[in-house]
Length: 139
Ligand SMILES: Cc1cc2nc3c(=O)[nH]c(=O)nc-3n(C[C@H](O)[C@H](O)[C@H](O)COP(=O)(O)O)c2cc1C
Image (cartoon, rainbow, N blue to C red; front, side, top):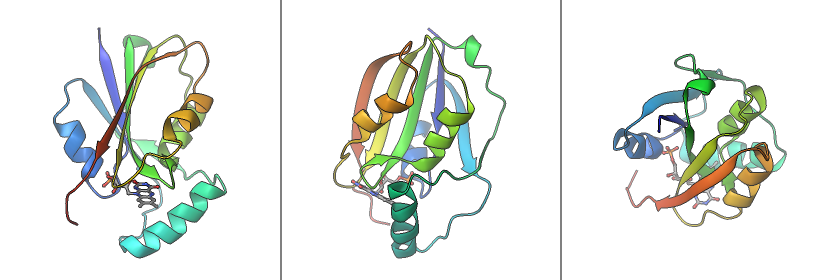
């Protein structure tokens, strides 16, 4: 089964997780740079998450979704949900009839991330795996 790993990492924790995975990897980046100050990230991105404001994104390589049996999303948790760049990706790309895995990285609670994610994917897909990885790395 061919697996595409589609990920977004703001501060490197997700990137470390993805580095240990095997599969074809695609990195989502935001078009506008996100502020590096962690307290301000919490304020601005937490607020954007609450009002569902989707950032503009780019992906580092072209993804031919049809080539893959499994699509694996790896994302930080923002305000108890999957990160906004992953939501932007799901809005901009058609993903149907796939096996889907979701791995989330958080430092406390994954909140309502799984439920939030299920609402975003087409019902023809099957979610075959959900993993929560808590980071204990000191920044
Ligand atoms: C805006 C924002 C909101 C966050 N909200 C949560 C949260 O609700 N629950 C949680 O456990 N961690 C939360 N975190 C922490 C990140 O999910 C966690 O540090 C993750 O491992 C970061 O991955 P990254 O370094 O790849 O960006 C938040 C981080 C940011 C920047």
